[in-house]
Image (cartoon, rainbow, N blue to C red; front, side, top):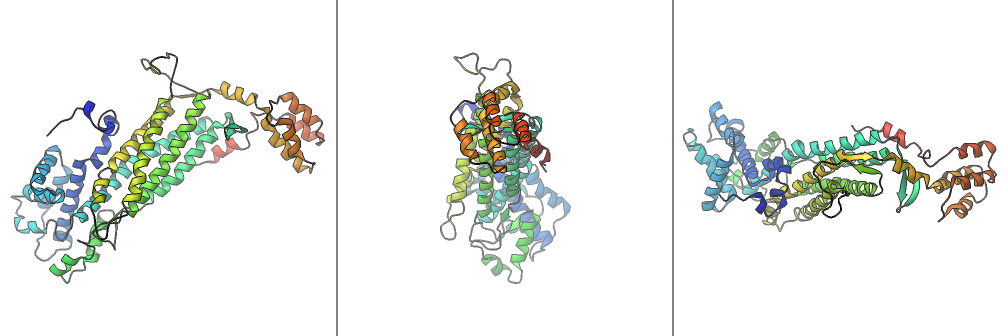
Length: 458
């Protein structure tokens, strides 16, 4: 076996970022796929013998069941290497799994029943079920917990900043103030909705033979209700059974997962860009780490590298998710192999996503809000009070309030004194003039703080 130093890796996932995606190798590596194939082959054999009690098989004793399951529970590098050796002869990766199981179970007393390993299966029965288990495991154990962590970190910041007013910028121009916490909670709310969509996608598998009709099954055992039995088998694995298919599972559910992840990634990418901009405006400083360098030429710089790293990797992941969603549901007639090579790259998209999530979390941990910078920005923009003043004037049915405030403020630098002077001549009731004179850009945040208080991350 050739061992490649990470410095010579073709992909940064196996080079520069290798430690940041280690947990995903259990699921998406070549060895991970081998292991899942063994799970499916072994559990199908056990099902035929012990649950279906198919004529011609025998009831497996506890030791035989344990020995069979040990093939995947204690799967290791040596096992993966042996399967690759077998594949050199078979030139078929799934058949190599079948031969490996038979080889490892010599002396088990099961040789007479070995042909019930892979019984009635086409390779795609094994593969699509393996990929379903792979996605299920990675989502439940790695991706969803990581995204939950991102949401919780964002929510923590939302609570901390809920009462800190900031100038909004619509079209990049000064607009009605909000609070920094409210802007964070917007992102959490978006992510929550898309997370619900992600976890609600049923993960599916087909297990119905060469073209989906149980052709060989029925010829071998005409009296068995194969559709019912294979459904039970797939559901016992924790998956949803696909009743109608060609040789392949159509991958529509995969497209749903990838589209959901793409939307989640887009939301985080959108957040990364906003925070990058807030850092550039001085609203946030970043905690420094001794020894780190921001620029090779400018010693003073503390660059927002974590949010930039996240944005870049999310773009890579989404480009791949986009291709997966567009390509995988399409196959020529009953089967072609174009999906096979594409599916082998699923882990790459998950890897880029995981790197991005970690980078966003790291960036969040470095943020230090600069209340003075936020206050100074608001203090320059008294013109934003044109909106509430003209709205109150509308309430009192005054003539052309919008146009009057537009004449006063549009494209101009407005001071508190000018606002006060306008109010005095506005014709509004005295009590309203006094109330509006107390209004400042900092206080003009509506119920932004309350919206954060009312939000539930559950």
